[in-house]
Length: 452
Image (cartoon, rainbow, N blue to C red; front, side, top):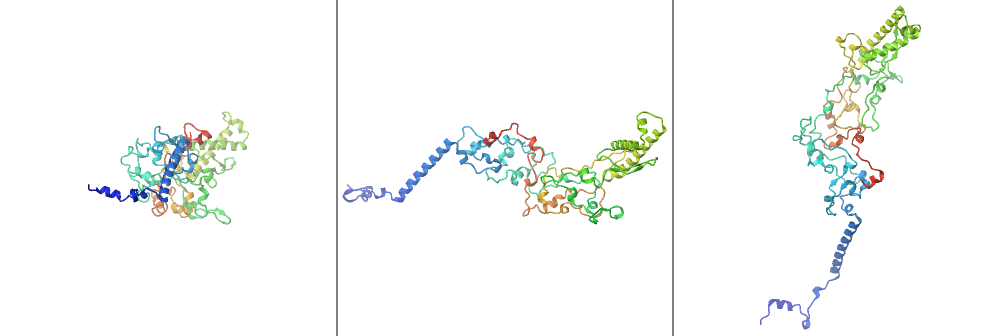
């Protein structure tokens, strides 16, 4: 009977006397090491998984990374910021902790009132990405978070609002600063050029007598404009603090028909003409009574005494003279004081217009003056240097073209110009945001550290 091919193959491995050769079934030392290392790796993984499961540390071991410094107390407490999803795989950290509970501490509203359910920006984590290291900022976002909505606003529900349809780049595709438009209804009469000139420029170009250390005194920007405690914004100009020293609301001395000299005195600032007239009448009545004490009792009751009538006339004359001087020279120096001819010639015919100087100039953006302290003021505010007197109501020094000054530095390849460098969200530009959007319920220290 012929032998099969498989039989011949098997006989090749037969040793002397028919003993099988089994050398290929024996492992050398390198192969043994590989087997034991594989077994050890499997054992380590199993032990590690068991420890994580029983010690409740699985979530912290599969995290994306360290949280920001502001969230450091809860670096190993996922439940402090995330809501656990019941029934989810305990190793599936993303699926298990996808729901957030940011509003426990951050009770701010949504970014915009017209966000629709399902929008990408509806969830906090769509813009604020934690677990990127302890020094990572959750506030300064990259532009792609903003332009995904603000790059095309044509389909926004509230398109009737005065928004620009497309904003994708500050240097090349950003609208002018609307809040700084020249149409602002400021009525202030003021000339920076005149105030910055040494000694001030008076009528006919004559120099004033404002001297300091033997030289003509010259104002600096810092003499009137002072930064707030944060060093970002300049405080509003205030008459009592910034103007009164050089421009007091003071009436000049009056000489009555009795040759009585009434010295100058201050009139409170901020009053309308009718109130100013009342203040002047009361002041002159008191001052003239000092020289005519005998009339004090007579003035308290109706009297036909000619002395009383003369005294009253003197008060009226002094009041009228000082009132006219204030309205036409004093108040009108800085304010617009329109006259209503239909109201007669009394104090009711005048009205002092408020200056309407904005407290916040850029209402839709933020600006940090301290970050620009190395620059000269006049580089960004043209027309504020010493020079010839400008018109009484000079143009605003923050006009719509101000963006051109910013682009000089804030452009690609130069100083950064990210959206969040100038814009806030969640009403973050509100000075009372901490009060307005405080959580409904507060936590004590231990609750806060536990994250609930």
